[in-house]
Length: 197
Image (cartoon, rainbow, N blue to C red; front, side):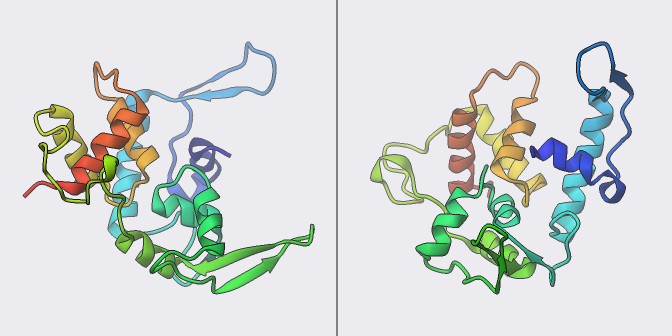
């Protein structure tokens, strides 16, 4: 399920706006349509609420969550990194608080939401590409003269709990933007290494 589908599925608790219309003239089920301005306004408010209370939608800090929730808090697009970390613990990564036995014979790790949030907020960031240590400015700060760096810094301030994927969707919605996702990833990394003073 995509992030947009999850937001729509949780509409009873997250206040997601009702569709302005439905596409019914195509094969398959009717598809909802929203006014872009209305949806963006709601989404900005939704991210602000998440930032304010530090929540995982539908879960409280004492609840348990699995790899999907952990990946979302860390800004990963899928659970592969979290699954790898469970078997090869990096420094500071919490051991699971519990395990859920699956019908197919496997087990799914579970952590308290508060422990996930703590790790996500304090996890080490990746260093600069090319082997330079994080914070190094030898050879110049990447994107230092690029106006997109300031946009990325502002997005990090406005939406501190948003995943990289959510931030990039927001940044790519800027009028006239043609930057690729990978470029925005690099700009966000640069913004994290050199936040606004």
